[in-house]
Image (cartoon, rainbow, N blue to C red):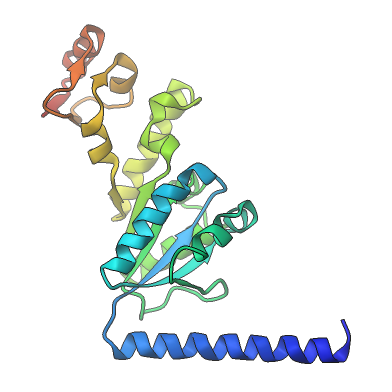
Length: 228
């Protein structure tokens, strides 16, 4: 790259930084709430769900500061999302006290597992544990394979383990959104669904949801409470 090109690139970078600072100051002055968003994984099937969530936040008046994991950036999620929403990317910045909450839409299975195990070796895990340390609310929605584990290629023991990981995040104080609503929408509860629950758990289902006889036997055996 020759000298004129380097100077032009430098001016573009300076302009981008200046615009970013102006937007941040404007958001603070307007009293807007800021949500730090971390996009994880490379599953493009999660794009519609993620986009819908972020557009809803924007429509509600929130300012979004988005960060992308390496896999999300390489998969095309980054370019697809930033072309559809008004959020701006802060890839190099850490969650700060000016952020009102941390939101991880369609959290990848890999990041879910690492957070549950207490690992801090990627963008999502470091941001989550930093947010918890400074008492910033953390909100998570799950990716499709975690919302519908019985439809995934996961073995039953792995499904049960991932279910435990979701419970671990709740124990950390992380809000898990959407999973209860998804359970209520199922029209048929099978034995495989019940095997993901533990003795004494509660199962929330829709008013017209059917339960197979084998699932009913397992519900009685594990003393699971069914809430319609």
